[in-house]
Image (spheres, rainbow, N blue to C red):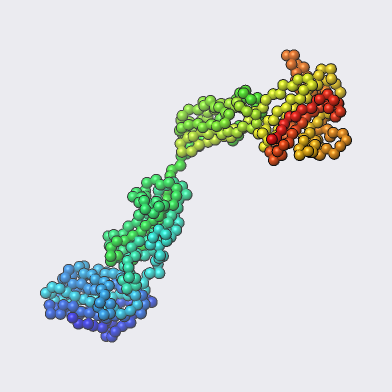
Length: 479
């Protein structure tokens, strides 16, 4: 075996080759049965990519000839390949700056010559986005935007093989993810390059990413498992969202309000459901909550531009505000309307009595309703109506100032009047030998912090008249 210095076309010397720009070097030698190998030493001033193109003459057989690149002292083999197809490009291989030996050999009793061109250019490692070789270091990518990477054997540049790159992708809706890749010839020709999609756990392989996937986070793994594969790649993810239904159901109103309704009685209203889409809607069910009922007059399949009716009933079981939702499920979505109503109980007043109830929600929402009913011979003139509260040893009175409720402490003297009413308005007989009475609504709001509060109501020609006749009553207390 002879060791040659790398021969340039114009000079014979040990050459230092830079990788700042591409360059090619040719070298020629003869192979005979007694001279079966050559060795050429070359230097690289920078990290470089090295490729070889060879041609064989005479009886040299590509299947019995080959080459290898070793360290300068020959102790470490970096590249080994066979010239099975002379004229093909072998490589590239990434080599770190330094001194190397290129070995040419023949192991058969053949003779002839060869010509080998060594092509050197700057290493393309700048295109690599390392490190992203595990789930934890996965790089985020944007759907429909191309991204690039690098995989393969780095030889003298790295001591290991860059097998895998990981990327993270997030979809905001259900659909299909299609993976498109393009590789350099030296990477794809290895026959062991691929791209897989995984769930967010990083372990569950999605074997067919072209099936419908729910919205969420996924990982893309791009890999190579051939020891001599080397090169760059580009990739792009194509997302196709799940086809949306063209059926769209809408109610004729977003809210259905029943107002005040006597507890235990029934109030009904109708609402229209319209298919404003371009395809039929498959109605799969109706959901309703609260003190509401529904009569469904809709078909299971509502055609485009058709409408149907739903009759909604409200039967309050208790006093106070009631809220509910009517939801119609169709295809993969739903349409809904908000329901509301207030339950109350009619007060049954008797002469010289004070009737009251709280239409709110306990102490958290005090909404008093009062009736004052004087006897028949006293239904004349005017009456003062009083609303008082006793709290922590202090007497308070409620008054109206320009229609606004005002609470004032009692500091002596005349009782503050809440309102003045005509006696003939407080109690009116009707044809059924019963009566109609004027109702007074007093909204006091949230009184739950006032533990021990007692609220009183009364009426009389004056405060002394009210007290003398006992025309007052404790109408609400907070424990």
